[in-house]
Image 1 (spheres, rainbow, N blue to C red):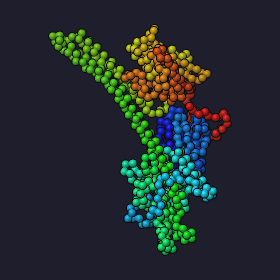
Image 2 (cartoon, rainbow, N blue to C red):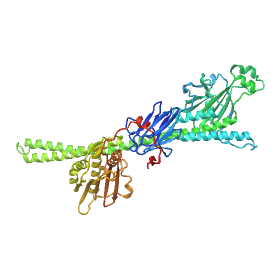
Image 3 (cartoon, rainbow, N blue to C red):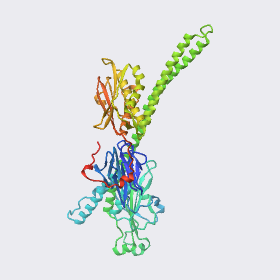
Image 4 (cartoon, rainbow, N blue to C red):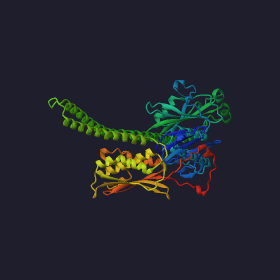
Length: 602
């Protein structure tokens, strides 16, 4: 079945099968292929079935659709094509050839069950594969040139197939198809060794078009063991070659069956075997006076293909293992980092709880008058209440920290579609600043707001943008807290509107410690924080993600020792965007004029 395999992006390693229905690609859940990529449009592209062809069509996306690096409006997909949408790169693998068989129809039989009495008539080492194109003694022989050109073409196509396929099953499918196309075999299969047990298991089975496929493939276990242990390719036949053999009397029953079995020799050992066989009818043997189709050239060719296929299997397995290792490493890093922050927060909660418990105990003692001759002590009760108030303040502050951490985790963990509503950017910013005034006062930071005059109503997600502004203002206060600038610590927040560029913005400036030049590119990396135990390393990545989901961006200017300026830029949208269905967009006539030329995203 054709498929798209994600080789780069947040969905790396995911495979999407393309069945008989047309499907759409985009960011929202209504798409058959939903990509976690903020630079992918809501409905970005569509894969269509046009007869026996598959084409990809761009749906007037914001950042365009690219195939093999070129911008397209519509393109017929071929195996090996690399499709880029946003920051996601997908590899297309096409329709499999006819003659696909069920792999369960392959049997490995013991020597005692070898009903065909096949024997090894030729064995060849791995090094023989490199002799495939070696010159004969007479270099002018045209048959050799024809064979060499044919072999070279097959090896080139094999190399091309393995370089464009990242899925092992589809890789083996294509290799088997090419073998049957170029080698005069009737049937074939590829087996891979199980990493844990070492046993061979069939993965692909094929038969040539026009060949009856009623019988199961029976392969001698003795021959398989020989190929794997010796690392040699073998040619087997059930025909007898001594002078006493009378073909007319022996072949009238079953004819002759020949087979080639070669190891898939990789860098670190044999990863599997390739097996092909052919049947020669009694009539062919008698008329052609020959009882074989396979020879040394076929064996050399199969050895070379087996080596090429083994390297590709190893590379693909290594790639999958690397992707899995990266995922596990990311999970481990996330758990370790979050555990550290949660532990610090819980320590704060525990400290506040202790003060509350102590205050309650003192309050009860003062109420009972244990130290005042049985009379209530108002002064002691007041001190106890103050202790409880102090403890509750610590608990409340840490409750806000855990709440902020959870919200950042939820925001960053998944792609979300903003819920745009007509909103006042000045009002959202003022509300965020109001929430930070107490925090600024504790840090002795002057917090000021300069709203833009005549700010129009803008379509945006107010809750998400409020979160982004809150993160940046909080960071600015933290940056000032450890600084000692002349004239005092200051954080200035301003909103702006540019109707010419159609952009609205929120600028947050501080005169804190600033950011080192080499660290500016790293501050948006998850879990990278310059605050030590106080920072989670999620605030700025979440802020950038929210802005990108709105189609905006975050700009940073900073000078170490003098302060930083963060600008959140948003495109101005006055009306709710009308959703155009993928089906309608796909049916529209696409204009290929120069005015529609797309520019590749950086």
